[in-house]
Image (cartoon, rainbow, N blue to C red; front, side, top):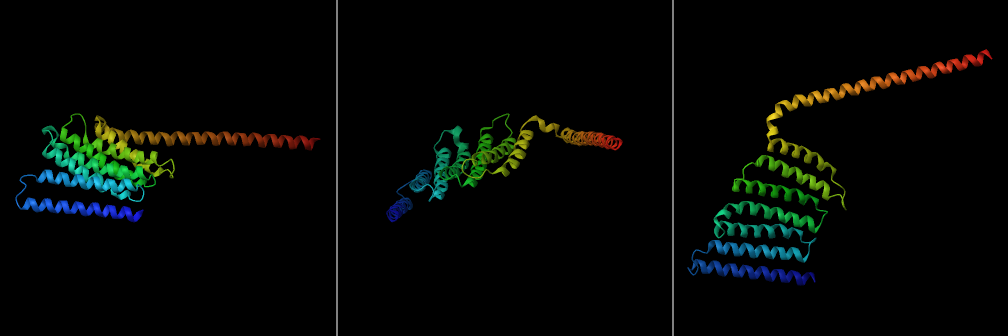
Length: 245
C-alpha cells in the first residue's frame, strides 16, 4: 500500500514538472503573451492542492505537507487579489498569504494534537495577518500595536486551554499570555496615558499589602502568646491545687 501511494505521488509530481516545463518552453517561444501572473497562480495553486492531497492521505505521517500546501494556495490567492481581484481587494494579498501560512500550522495541530507547538506559529502568523489587514484597510480606532500583543497573548492562552485534554497542560503558557494581554490592553486603549500614575499606585498597593500582612502577623503572634500564657497560668494553678491537697 505504501509503495503504491509513493508511486502515485511520484507520478503526479513528474506530470506537474512536465506540464510546467512545456508551459515555460511555449512561453519562451512566444506562444503565450502576458500570462505570467495567470501561469504563476495556476502553478502555485496546483502545487498547493498536490501537497494538501499528500497531507490528506496520511494525516499524522505526512503532517508536514499541510504547511507548504496551504502556503502555496495562499500565494495563488495573493496573485489573484493583486492581479485579477477588485481594486479594493488589491491590498489584501499580504494578509491572505500570512493567514495561509498560519492555517497550515492549524492543520498540523488538528491532525495530531500532540504537536501543540504548532499553535504558536499559527497564532503568530494569524495575528500578523490581522495587523496587516487593519493597516491595508485603514480601519480607524484600532491600534495595530495593541492588536499584535493581544493576538500573541490569546495565542498562548489557547495553547494552555487546548493542551489540557489528552496532553499534559502547558501551564507555563499562562505567564506570557497574561503579560502580553495586559500589554495589549494598555497599548491599544487610552489607558496608556495613565502609565505614569500606574507604577506609583502599584508600589502603594504592594506596600499596603505588606504592612497589612505584617500587622496581621503581629496580631496573630500576640493572640498566640496570650493563649500560651493563659495555658501556663492554668497549668500552674492546677499544680498548686494538687500540692495543697
